[in-house]
Length: 538
Image (tube, rainbow, N blue to C red):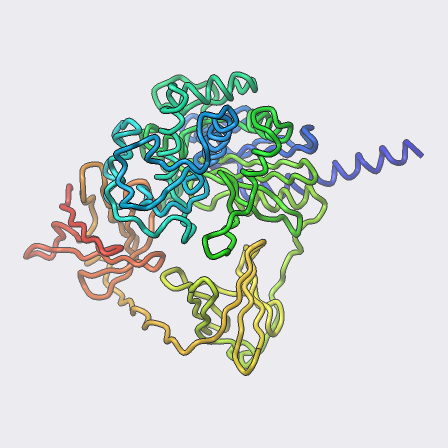
């Protein structure tokens, strides 16, 4: 009997390994930037592999030991540091930030440590300030970084909304320094990395020799290029830590075993907090609150120049899945969710598109307003329904039935119904659910793109400097034209007329100024109410 049981367990493990191998090989081909993947159950590693390349120029294959910039997963280390100091009686989560920075201009608003930790402070996030990217190469102290955003108008009153906020975590890092009388880097090294024997984890640096560092890459139209330089003083306590999958497991086990903070404090970090009006935000302190095919999970991801990461912890099973990648583009979030689901033994069912008549689909066309004031436009084009969130992209929906639809390669679904004579859209994206009711608000007229000849488009090629260190590179391919801003991906732009172009991925416009021969000498970027002119460098 025991031999049969052991054989069954071995077959299950073999099946999981084969399934994950297929999934990850498909997403991280051997010749491209890659990933390291680790899955552990009850602290025991059940899957640990590497895929793709760590360095394209030297043909270095990825190994599980490689070290990555983990981006915003850093926020977990920052919030646990704050909770450690709280347990030592050195601060309270209800403390106002002016206790640590008396001259911070709160404009009479009560902003607490709690608000900073769960992204409800209303402070302007400096990474959303277009002008900030011009300083990507500049080393700055925490107080210099705070000076960048502290006088910006607040986005909302504390606790009124949830808005992911890197500025808040810069302030948290500074609070750690004020209270502990150590730098943030010293604190996490001495209080976290050393006690947990996380020997391959660092406060990030470009100048320090870091063994097994994986190089970061950003996508281009024809492949990848080396990632843009970003001073790691800028992400600071919001995103500057480097680590590998083995050390990340040590970190997760320390959380599970309450090595650094108590169970009570940990549950504060894992709580699904609410706004002032009682609406949940699905975020705790440095951790997102979600579910994997119905099983509650605690998660977070990170994205920084050249790297994207994601980690999922399932408390009820003590299961941990983490993927670290050395490229920007399609991040590892959905893949990590799939990996965790397979490890739990509850994989997501593969959805296949059903044949639904045009009449059945068109009945759900309309504008839907959701509880959170989000507007989504459902349209019919090219034989399919499309969903467009106001101010965002228009995405295709695959039919699962006459009134059931899903985004392609996504965990997000729509179910349409009729209630009280009105069309209703039930929106579900894992733990997040919403109900939209049809309104008579008209969808804004879609901008119409015109086709320009390749020789006209070539007149706009070049690099335009909007500010020192912040540039837009314009390239063409046939009758297509592309724009790539410093630290961002490459996007196609579309002509409204011979010199005016718009983007479809975001609400933005680029207008070129030309000389008498029609050759561009400068451009102006219009986005988010800002007008940013830039002269051509070459």
